[in-house]
Amino acid sequence: MTAAAAVMMAGLPLVVAAPAAAAPGVRLDPAAVDRFVEGYRSAAGMPGVVVAITHDATVVHVAGYGVDSTGARLNARTPMRLASVSKSFTALAVMQQVEAGRVALDRPVRDYLPEFRMADRRATGITVRQILGHASGITQNAFPTANLRVAPSLREAVAQLATARLGADPGTAWSYHNANYWIAARLVEVVSGVPFTEYLRGRIFGPLGMSHTVATITTRDRVPGLADGHNVAYGFSVSRPEIAEFDAGSGGIVSTAEDMAAWLISQNNGGQGPGGGRVLSAAGVAELHRPSAPGGEYGLGWFTKTLPSGARKISHGGTAWTFTSHQVLLPDSGYGIVVLSNSRPPYVEDTLGLVDGLVAMTRGETPRDALAYRIIAEAMVTILTLVTVTIYVVVVVRARVWAHGRRRRVWAAPLRLLPHMVVAGAAAAFPALMRSIGWDINWHQLYVIAPSFAVWLTLLAAGAAAGTIVRLMRLLRLVRAGRSSVWSTAVSSYPQAHA
Image 1 (cartoon, rainbow, N blue to C red):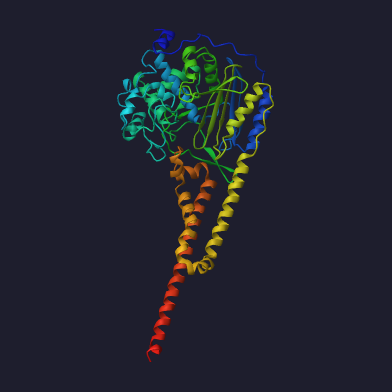
Image 2: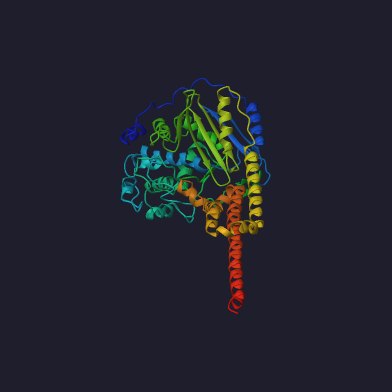
């Protein structure tokens, strides 16, 4: 069966077999790219980044900037975690099975993966397309993963869904969830009969010449040459190992700038890599990039949108616990850009700003310089922490004075203490509150990615609780003392009254 016939049988729109001619673009000067990236990295406080830029089927520039956690200089072959950029590879692997005639995008996942079970009848109708487009109905609220055990295999990771329910009807809402891509990767594994990591190596990495790229099952799998990433604490980058987490299919690929250049070329060149190896038809690549999920901005493993200029932008970012990544395709100019960073800032994804600057350069525009977001944000949190500590030290020290002022209206004291109790409860329950709005995180993870913020929350909860308890104890002592004084006066005056 030809690739075009397979695509048609799967119900996909058939597009031209060759990539559209790119619009004339600005020729980038590698030296200018180096100056911008290094200046941005330094100003933003990023320990290290690697960059790949391609144009049509040509590599424009690959390079590394800064250092890794061992102090070694980064270069075009330095391994970096792709995090959720890996989803684009998983989606392509599924599409390969579509073109082989083994899978149809709009048929239920259960047709190919009978082991997929959920505690919700609606799950039987989830289609392959809905899994790849995050429209399956699996949501963070319905299936939180922050406290899941680290599964040793895709089979066991998918099995963890057996007790979960859906958060929405399949196909009705877009909700980003890594579990969708566990299912997709397991589907590839079962349909192809090849373990997923081996499948990627043989069917994608190999044909594209990505010889320094590997796929992992968990974040603790050993990868030769991969150093620890970084987090930010009070404005300083701190190296630390990645949190143990299952990431096959959803974020388990480790790659280099040099290899990612080959990946970008395959995406802008109708599925064909720089060495002539083909991983997908042009029709299949176009389907991956076509928005099909609810909301109109997500295709299959890629975000897609139209810029104010009218040009298309196809992209996907990724955030591991100590790395960040971003890839962009600009079909109208033929450019592709990848930026991989060995750090994860707590508040602002600075790889995205760096990518935006490089995109501007492809249009002949002057990129914006980086602001020291990390330093500014960390300074604000530090000030907030000092203010919080000062307030609650004063509250505790002056608790006796406060109690004296409330001793005649004891009944109103709980109302006065209520705001502090609410603050203590909200700060202590912060991870749970975040899960309720779709950000699945626990305290350990929060201390890794935002230690200064987590310290502030901890001190806020502790200070508010301590202030409430000390004030209440002081007030109760005064009340008891007052009652004891009244009783003593009554007892001492009794003999005199009856003399």
